[in-house]
Amino acid sequence: MAQKLFAEAILGKLTLQNHIVMAPMTRNRATADHIPTDIMATYYAQRASVGLIISEGVGPSPNGEGYARIPGIHSAAQVEAWKNVTDAVHAKGGKIFAQLMHTGRIGHSLHLGENAEIIAPSALAAAGEIYTDTDGMLPHPTPRALTTEEVKQTIQEFVNASVNAVEAGFDGVELHGANGYLIEQFISPDSNHRTDEYGGTIENRSRFLLEIAEEAGKAIGLHKVGVRLSPYGVFNDIKPYAEVDETYTYIAQKLNEIGVVYLHLVDHSSMGAPIVPDAIVNAIREAYKGSLILSGGYDAERAEAALQSGLANLIAFGRPLIANPDFVERLKTGAELNQPDFSTFYSPGEKGYTDYPVLEAVASK
Image (cartoon, rainbow, N blue to C red; front, side, top):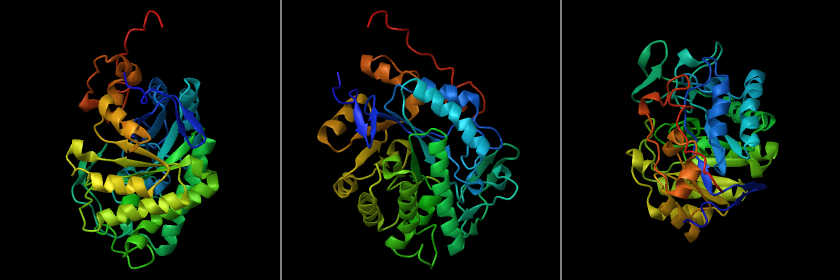
């Protein structure tokens, strides 16, 4: 049996039950106006046996809620509703971070509040279409480019959301710098054509993320701030570029200097993206001395090897946790895993969300 995967882990000032992390996964179970629901509390509490839950992407501001039924954390009503979720997880002995995800240009105005709009580093529409509850699939709209002053205001929105998350009972926040959302839209030279201090060079394109991390750390403590990155990710029309290795090594060095509690590195190759080469993973591991979470198609054996080697401090699992609320117990015992129902990943309601079966209780411990 794996020795380290199921042992207690330390993350900043937290003691985790094990080295298993529930990766952030959008499930679209909030209300149409982005308020968390009671079934979300049930869902997360069911999975609280993992060491750390990272929530689905949460909109840090009205402009950042571009998908249907994703939750936000900028209003008093949202903060109050999240307390039900965090209380439920903590009652089961779990720990939970809120993933702050600003959709940027990956969104549609049909999902936004009255005074919100689709914004991005540059007025460049993403290729492809986005699902809307009312009109089905629609082309990605062309966003409005933020002014320099508005970039600074958006950074503050992330900081305010971090404060709200702690008020709502979260143990910390993860800044979503991956998957083609706003932070990665700044990092990528394909989606960022700015000529001010937030565009052009690697240092300038990384500035948006690094300033958010630093300011959020000042507001809630750096031991409560993590960052997710996906070098070589192509999700949401992020295109490969020549200086990707140099970019992410630089970001890792700067995040190390700032002192965020973890860096969450995701490899989407199991979902069709290019493999993140070992060389860049090793370069990031060398540059960043905090807790490194690795994510992407792991099983128990591979996870244990990554932990034992020191390459990773924690391992994140995604889709298996959708279908297996008792995932930790199943890994421990070698029990068969439930298979996820892909048709209910993003649909409203309890089906395919809180109704997956658990193993029969073990008769004797």
